[in-house]
Image 1 (tube, rainbow, N blue to C red):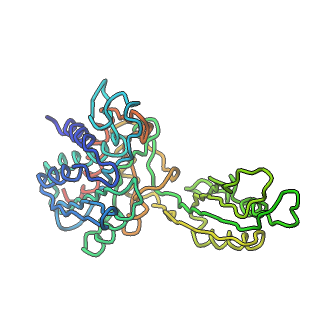
Image 2: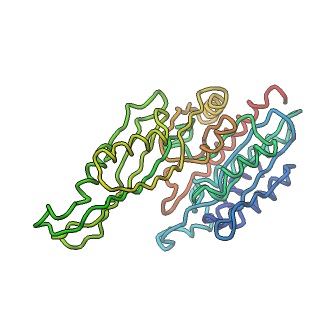
Image 3: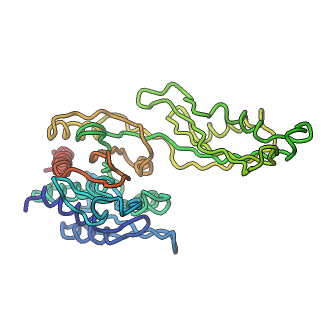
Length: 383
């Protein structure tokens, strides 16, 4: 069996592991066995206690530099209504040239591709250097005890790579569409305004919290906060919920709560946004409380050797040169950027998180070829 087919088989076996966050589901055990057989030194890194405990895997072939890393996750989102699936979401069925199942696109297919690419590359290993793997079981969850904790461990144990490629499904329609070389930040808020309950016929005896709340939400209600940058779209803010718990049409409520989220580029920081909004809330609001949650800070890997290697490999294998993009949600690259340059490139993500998630077998094979080309480029001078 050739190594490309080995990638598809490994992807299929990974899909068959029911690793819904935070369950390991056998996926890390499978990868540890594969990587150990390739000559990697493997370290399991469980973080957290009791229900928050998450298992992770670090593996490294070689000991010195240059040092290239792959990163990814084996946890998946729940399948939802299993009856609605054409095939069992954890059966890993291959039908009509497509691998079906939860995680096929996001991102067990990508993990299988970079493991298989490394196995192929190591058939004629470089004279020096290292390849490492950071595999988490907590990307689809709160991301507290996953890659961010692994990055602390990598830093503390002298395992920091020179650069890292995350195998997230970045492509929109075809292989070679998109490289993610950065991500926006994400800031959420639960804003509660307190007023005085009363009869709507006597508003002077009450204080309607909704009047204050709506004025407080005005600058972030479906707005663009800037004009964007060379690499980022404009920052956007959207109100996602307003609730007063009021079933009566003739009662002014005592309090009102809203939730909103801001996806912001490098023109802002979480602190600057919070400062701006709290000053605005003080100015137009009355009695209020804001509970902020920062889940990601914006980051950018400028175009350079890493993005060029990915682009050139994709162009060589599939005939398309990917464009650079920073749109979409967040990923674990937001943690890796703190120790080395990082970019993301993987499979086509059209069906990720959906019923009947699937990927083309041909795309897994192409991605394996692309990753192999990247490794050859990175270790060109020492092979």
